Length: 339
Image 1: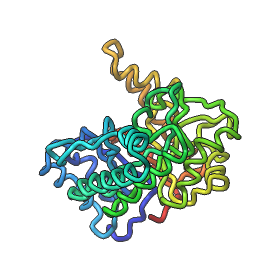
Image 2: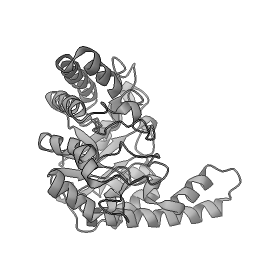
Image 3: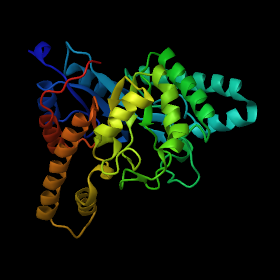
């Protein structure tokens, strides 16, 4: 019976705008804590309502969570007419803070994120997977860029707290990201592993300080797939027990730590690069792509196990590939999380 299922600490993406038969068969007997939606999953109001209802219907006696990346600006999976308006990127609130003062900026930020979350609640979605709490650095890759609330600790903390407040007022789940700080990354972690060589003292006074100040205010945080030389010169934060322990003991975050998407190439090195290059190439044969896919799945299994062993509470897998889903689910044996 479904009521006897125990949830594994996994959040999965699905492949399309409705559940496939394979997905329905798999998930109906394997409980996870939630699902995350992407542009490929969203076509119309009626379709989105039906999809969310179907996802919840997989587990009639268990509460699951539905997530979507809805920061505003360039990271927004829902667009008009599905929602009333397009919400601005974090940079807009940063500029308001600088031009019109903190008080007005905080009020505008809180109201905007409350409205944003109310839009998601109409579709029974639980979390917008924000706010971004990373500092902005001019020298860094622009994967964060205008998604950041600013360059100074106080400003970012003020505006993140306002966003958190707005999301919670609309009964949503805020998630601060990317702990312990993605702002200094010189490359996009979707594509390769960033390495931060900054000394610990400076990070403690900047990037890490933001998350330290926000930690009492929020229950969820998402990791950065970044290698910090001063904490662990061998493993990225998501896979490093040293870094996760630092987040717990020194930054002071005691809530639920969810990985960023484990499909991102920062965690897979050459195997990931070769597989995604082959998938996008017209010159690669089916057999070669399948061989590389199996190697990538083996890497996903390893990454899943390492992230849980490091101390992450929940693993996020976004691709929607059913073969990957089977392998990642099987990779987690005894780990559970209380939501």
